[in-house]
Length: 159
Image 1 (tube, rainbow, N blue to C red):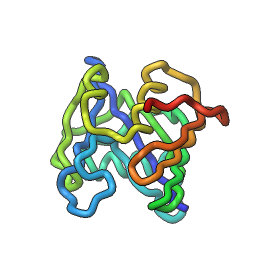
Image 2 (image 1 turned 135 degrees about the vertical axis):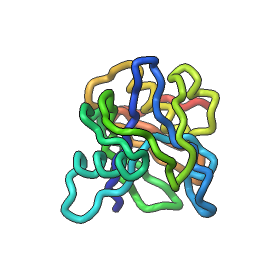
Image 3 (image 1 turned 90 degrees about the vertical axis):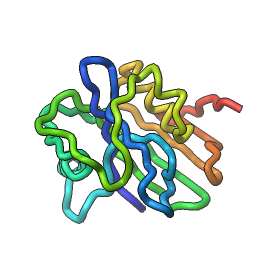
């Protein structure tokens, strides 16, 4: 079982700081646009992890962030992952290059046109709707989203 965090930094222009995963060869997220985060280390809380990961990936230190929900990933290829999802509106520092990909501010309205996991589109929509703390389960068969449930209730999937 994997425990991880993911955070979307949002600026006043309605843009998220996104990571285009293009630098690692054998990357499950290769060529996709994702938020920022990573795996919890031994003894680390999700909050400590998200602050550390943002600092490591961007050079920024979070000053205002909020836990939004838990996303459970189940896959026929990878180990089950429980991801703590955050948004942030405050940080200090200057963005630096990321060794995992290219960082870019992308307006929320433009995200749908970018290569992403189908499940990411679901939780990004929940964030845009400002849904209170939620639990989202996503089950993948290969790279295809085969099942999604919000707070225990199945969601319809796009064909």
